[in-house]
Length: 259
Image 1 (cartoon, helix red, strand yellow):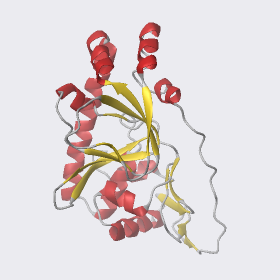
Image 2: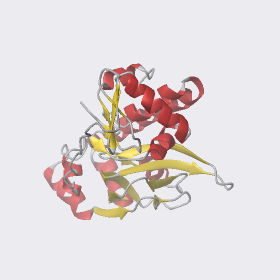
Image 3: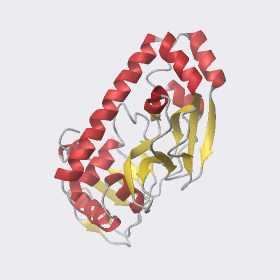
Image 4: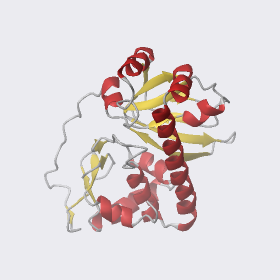
């Protein structure tokens, strides 16, 4: 299983850890096929399990939105009008302060469903969701979400599992940022985008910048870049033109206690 994240680097690394020169021919990957809202629903854990009539009811009421890189899908203080699903792209979940500082809580990649906690609480959103790349997001109206939760026990069970998995990952992030070294935090950010429940549809070649990986890792761009090179030397990732391929996901997970 491979996973690729775009980084700005002039260095590539082979599987045995020996660096290739910049003159070495580098593989170019074709653009991935455009995904649809129906693709997202078909590959989600909750939707196929619904009765056919319920699926039709839900699908008719869903819409999608395009979110350009650097713009917000929703902001802190917004009313919870929708539950969201990531069709394409990559977004970050973050909290900012009045003096311009921010903390990234996590990445939201293809296949992710998010925002259920705020809809359940019925209170204003407490975080921003910002697109790191041009993204497309599914919108389920809050009233449809509430109807599903009340009438479909299987959907309610899904939400319980979703919230539990997210809480477990957030607790792990809190511990990691206090206890792990830079390489392990970068490894955790990569591993997190493979989470089988929270991010089940991550594209195997997802292009983001070093700065974006650094945001997801909670480290500076310079330290993130150095960590990626060390992970490449260890044979866990392979840096390539416009991307970074995870060649040893099990090895990356071994760097992240509890992942």
